[in-house]
Length: 536
Image (cartoon, rainbow, N blue to C red; front, side, top):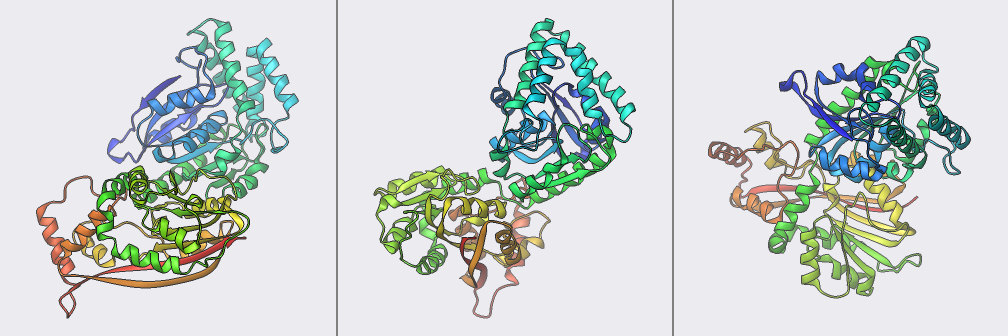
């Protein structure tokens, strides 16, 4: 494989790094209709499939290719692929979601070749005949492939000529890097990736924002799959481009770039208000040994949530999950409340540091696990219930979270959640707003956003309660110390990357003084939501 970087034309306006993975039959020159438009705003990194362009001719499986991509790509980026490239991009985004701001696919099926579970694809007989044709007559087959890619386009004849030239140039360029038999073998290998890849599970569990564009006259990937993708993962955006063929970015370059730009700008903007999961895990891990010393509010909220859980066993499953268990304070209390043995209570947290501390401090036979709430390492319908106090506010995609909970909880199981609302730390937020425009307070979803996420998932809302808890402090430094000790300080992408200067700190403290009450105390408001959920 080969990785090339193309800087943005106007670097001071660069919004994002965009990684492009081309499809089968054409190398990176297949991006030529949109490359100049995209590089106006984005740094472009093109990735060549093995044996294409100037990449070495080497045997490589699709998994090995994705591993090599992960090793060579930057820390954060938006990922885009066309056809086979889009299928590979989907698997990569599912594999390293913490590094991918967003995913864009163009004319990419979940399975390129039909199967019993996915009939909306090319027939296996047609694919076998095509693969055999390439093995025996590669250049003739590439001409035929160009015809399939251009079929149905409003300007089909003109597009056919351009795509035939692109395929031929790609093939001849690759032949300069190795013997024809070796190059043909590698192209045949990547062609077989189309038959082997099945992205149904990876797509259904995608947590990164996604835009998936299809062409209404595509002769290779039917646009009729669009509703199925939306149903499989409602958090993904699926659109169809009219009057276009499989090479939709050749057919409608302006429209495709407009859709991509709008999507990336929204993804980047949203990321400024979302938390960085690695920072969350690292921050709470460092705070594990001190957390319990300042967690009075957390105890108060968790105790109220626990008291609302009926201590009645559910027959379909035995295990209960303490989701976002932190130091494990409530894990043994959950077992006691439910009258369950320790082996039937699992504590799961994003932070390995918290899990290590909980295992050491709580002892017993509890099941401890480090994992992501949006991608739980648990079997379907394996839980009798879930207890989660002040954890899901760190999940950027609530719909994905709720669907994941619906997957792992038994049909007659129950889910009990306490989380924070947007009025949380409103005094802190308002004080910082008088100092600068950076994000200093973590974003918390509103009641409407939480309810909408539940409604769009496989769960139903059984009960909703809310309350405002106002803590009192003599000095603002007491609040900021408590937040830092908890590990719950600002972890948004939109925070300032530099040190906070002395003058800004003084200005912030002066701004917070405007909230001082008649009794001499400074308030800190916490808006708390309590949810009880069940399977639909």
